[in-house]
Amino acid sequence: MNSIYEEAVNAIPFKARRGRLEADGSGNLHMDGVDLPELARQYGTPLFVFSERSLRANYRDMRRIFSRYFEKLEICFACKSNSLLAVLRTLREEGAWADVVSGGEYYKALKAGVPGERIVFNGNNKKREELKQAIENGSLINVDSIAELYMVHEAAEGLGTKAKISIRVNGDISPDIIAEFATAQKGSKFGVDLDGEAFSAYRYASQSPHMEVLGIHSHIGSQIEDSRYYRHAGERIMDFVGVLKKELGIELTYVNMGGGFGIPFDYLTQPDGLEAFASSIHSIIQSKVKEYGLKTPVLMIEPGASLAGTCAVTLMKVGTVKQREGKKLAALDGGGDTLLRATQGWYTYRALCANKMDQPEEEICDLVGPLCYEGDVLARGRRMCVLKENDILAFLDTGAYTTSLMNNYNGRPTAAAVMITESGDVKLIKRRQSLEDLISGEE
Image (cartoon, rainbow, N blue to C red; front, side):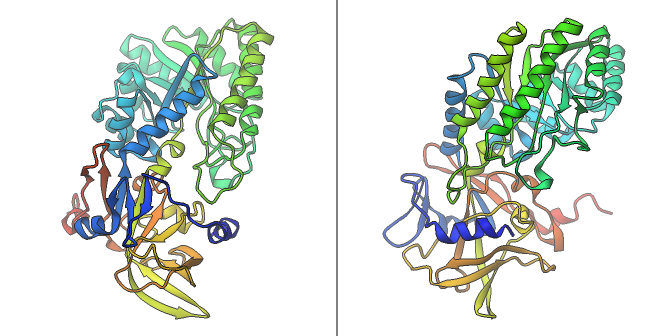
């Protein structure tokens, strides 16, 4: 667990989000006006509850802020963060492209109604049949390696057409995040090094009659709270774009800065907001456009968690409660099978007792899951009200990297998910797995 963030959750009290997340007079927590303990009774737990209103608002806020700096902008939702069809459809209706990293995510994006020409295909080990599908559908492929570049050429040649490509570059940027979230350092499995094979990759692609070189792609990591790292990455990328024009005559249409803008968890006191990210990226791109005499590119960004993260809560029920060394252990009916990143110490979620919002937080608890390993702990040393069996806990801001990471460890069926629509109705968007589902496909 990240002890700094755990301390911050305890030190900074929860503040109601008016009209979004607040308690009623009886002490029950409501989301968009809907009683969360009542939803737990109706649909069971663990249960993900999504807010359509918040998801649309997050997208519109991001577009509004970035559009102040960039006249030409495309927002590509990172499906790896949440690939529920209801989420993908909602963002597609708002105008988002889809950023996918596998044939499965590609399939779900198409099922959600995203046109092939509005899909960006990422990933470091794409299959030949996946590349062929992307080319046939007119998708933009972010080529990850020299070997993949040859594969794209061969696939497009076989189809008698041109593949639309960008090339993912590694600028050796080290943002201040956990090691597992950093994706643009020396030795990373992603992309081609800017100071290595990148130039020869663009030269080969530009000479191929079966590739249309449209852009450059960079993604430096996840849960980044300091916008300066995007300025550093942008400077390296745009200097390279200037070289491409001078040496190869390539004028790129897209500059894709990836995603990774941090979820604005309510206990964070000094994270940069979207305005800072947009401003940092804009300042360096504009200065380099002038320096190298470039045409102004379309900015592409690939946000995931920063769009979906704050749009959901996860409800869990308290089971057994134990006393251990001066604190309580409250066992819940979900753990690493439901909120995996919390048990890894990668995300720290605020937890509220959704049916006792009017009671003081006077005990120190570890919130533990039901899985058969000692590390299945969702929160340590958390200040909570007195918890008892059947209480309902709400983990906040759990819309990203949760439903897409659920698993069946210990034979536990995955959780259901509902969405509170803009009209206030509740819609089941993912049913709870049954025991029969656990053996589906097995002999």
